[in-house]
Image 1 (cartoon, rainbow, N blue to C red):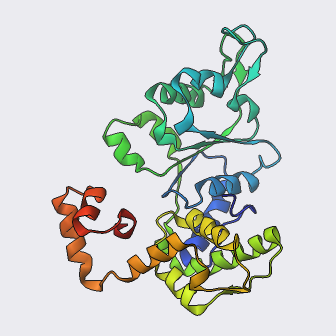
Image 2 (image 1 turned 90 degrees about the vertical axis):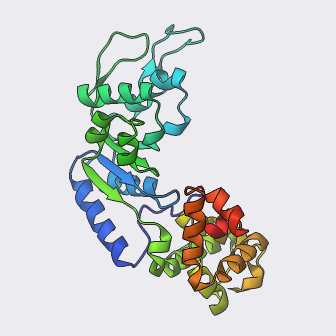
Image 3 (image 1 turned 120 degrees about the vertical axis):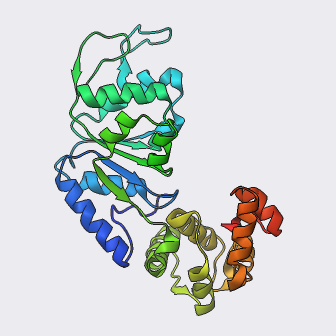
Length: 298
């Protein structure tokens, strides 16, 4: 989903106010940035905000999905290649870093990089230069590095799944984006923003949600965070004739999720913890033990 498309963090909570203020300070520096947070919390959006408020804003902002980088293509994708570097290289090709020169590189899901890619990246950050595959010419590099992960980077380092030297290079300015369940005050702002955007997209005039529907959405924990909320609103808009969104207008699967979460008694905490401990924190096993869906357990 492409929400929000304006480069700003939506939310009136104290947490989001502090994050927006800190992002502006980080943008004014040229430090390397590590952004952490669950899936759907807006890590790429935060990186884009840093770029757009920085002195590099007129230069490229290039995103690299580290989880989707095959090991045999790491060098050609990141650093480019010269004509004839390998079979099928009929023309020279600029790598992502060279395309971003002068601007910002955003390394998404950095903890999913292979050890080979981590070594190559570390060398590039330290030397501030690259070589195209099959080339001998040194290309000086002037880029700002921003990186993000939905994992715990310190745990990854302690388990030797992520290089500690690369971690220290990246972890200069640190930003953590809290999950939506920890800032539920922002749900109303996000819904207002999302409905406004969808009204323009679908040429509708939806005014908002009924009190019943809003109260249910406020109680839901949004494990997919802002992305899940925005995708949910769009799914609701697809077949929506009314001016106000009621519970009956919500996608059927989502209605079921809300009913499941609504039925969890307040004294279930011990029951849940017991199931998790018995299954060594295996959430799928614990959900089966509780006779719940895994989503309900989340």
